[in-house]
Image 1 (cartoon, rainbow, N blue to C red):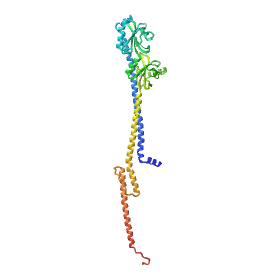
Image 2: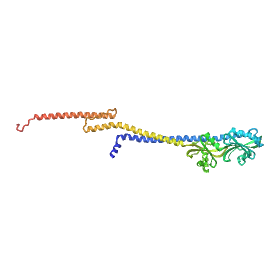
Image 3: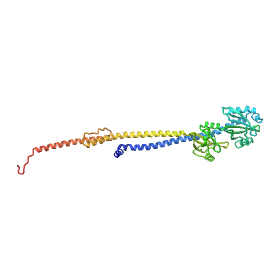
Image 4: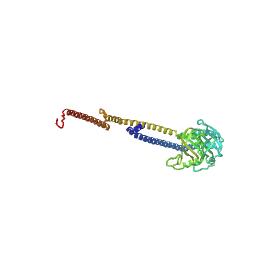
Length: 415
């Protein structure tokens, strides 16, 4: 066994194939590692950029949707006859004015309030297309922002306010503005958007899954799932919430803005919801310089794992095929070299043992062919010299035999 192993490891075939095999394995392994890492890095970078783009779209869309609510608010406040109807609390007239605006604008909620913050008449979508229901007597007076509008207070952003309120079993983002009859403040207009609809519209625009968190880091609404118990891993503790806000306030050369101000860093995070892995980017949910919490944009990241696994499997297959190809090619090259060498060795052994009729019969145009040709010439020369020696020996023997027939022997007396 040891002799066989020694022969295998000391053979010319092993010396030819083994270095190329080792080199192929090293180059192939390093190449597969580098290519896989590059592919993974490129995919991850593109994925993160797509995530950040989605965040920017959400940030811009939050402002755009607020502008839409302001337009609806102005349309209501400046509708002919509405200030007088509100001042007189003319329900019938208001029923003719407000619902058409709600239907045409696709608003979720429109309410007009008296100076005390009590709803005179409201219209709210009921979830079936753009159909709505009339509401009255809802109390908005407990909201400080409504009180400021009804008090006629004006800040650097104007006489309107934005607030987040819980109406019944749902959260609604409200935009409030005053209603004037000439110069007299006769009430206010409230235009609202439910967070459920807001999240859906933001997700639709950004082609991502949007989640809204309050200032305590708790989930208010999410496009990931309706079951908030599943979303416990997406909510943030107050400490983590403040940490994220701090990160969002830092400038970064690596990430552009996901919020409205110009250069802020975006924290990223990986979560799993219902067996699906998502990567999150955070942004500051802010309107009229007022913080409402955070928003997150989420994209499924499973495809990166699948792509990396596919790339790894493909590269592994290519590497295996390359190794087999190198072994096959090396074996073929080795056999092409070794077969004539083995034939040369066998012929030389036979010649050494006295079989001078053996010839290599190798006809090649390379060094092995020249060596075989020289060996055959040497063998032919050796055969010729042997024949000459044999002839000379025969002649010498004949001469010696002839000499014996003609010799006369004499003693010392010459007799």
